[in-house]
Amino acid sequence: MSLPLERRLTLDADTRVTRNRPGRASSKEGESWVIIAKLLWLLIPRTEDSTGDTIRRGPITKAGNRRARRMLVECSWSYQHPPRVGPHKQHKVEAAPQAVREIAWKAQCRLHKRYRALIRRGKLKTVAITAVARELAGFIWAVSREVTTARGVAR
Image (cartoon, rainbow, N blue to C red; front, side, top):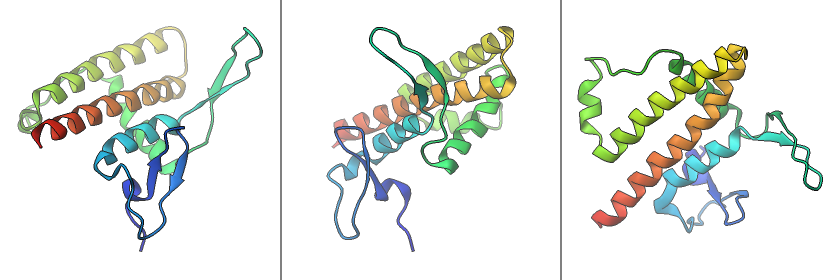
């Protein structure tokens, strides 16, 4: 039986992914959401071919966790629709902290706008969705940071 992802993976100070040995507690056990969010950002890295002052960034790589990358991309398909909260989801939104709601609404608006801009420039839908997925990981990180900060203040 395997441990959940947030217990198995931790992020070193050098942003390298390491596995915990069974029986060893992570030094950042309470910050599991921050770790997951940082890992999500690392799941969709871009290739880079840089020399000196020249920086050339290429397409995304397939490095990282395939399932998590797929989850991010599947979630990103919803940003092709205009941002709104349906009546059946309203009670879930109201249950979230105010700061998280603000970040979530900002994410909805920004990611939809980003998707539309990429499509207008002639990018393929799949390319636009992948770019939105990369940016979505940043918003997940922001929400996780807010939740972790709120928990630290509450203690």
